[in-house]
Image (cartoon, rainbow, N blue to C red; front, side, top):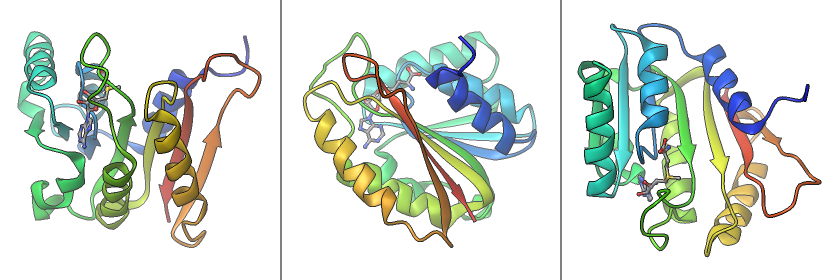
Length: 190
Ligand code: SAM
């Protein structure tokens, strides 16, 4: 298949925006796969700020980072991403070059603990304040679970009204696949 699939597309966007030494955010740490990806992208001199509301996710991701000797460049907050601008130290404000969200529930865990439209949108609003121009927010939107359609619709409505002088907003989606395939919303701050 020549058309890029959803997850490689997401990673490529971050690859373009993030340089070694940058500060970045994993807004939904989960099992820590994206946290590891971001930690490798920013390198030894960079900084990753991760957020998750579940203890289980924090423990699993810290262990994964430890095994890969990446813990020193990552700070994980046991907190919702809607508090990110208070928790990320001021010295990084204006310097965050990349953020990823994987919406939905933690695979293999409690499917009732899901990301929610109001907190996801609050986090995006804060990110648009603290990111650097040309910084990219990538949202991988899973929407097949209970509450997923509501989050998708609120998010799309919010993203469509972001002023075009504030950010470029892209939707990347396969439109003929069955079973609610995930899609991407990418927001590049201007
Ligand atoms: N990126 C993860 C990985 O690589 O394994 C998967 C993330 S999973 C789809 C979504 C995660 O978002 C869950 O672990 C869930 O606990 C977390 N979550 C839900 N609401 C949140 C919030 N307000 N702030 C931060 N994380 C949240």
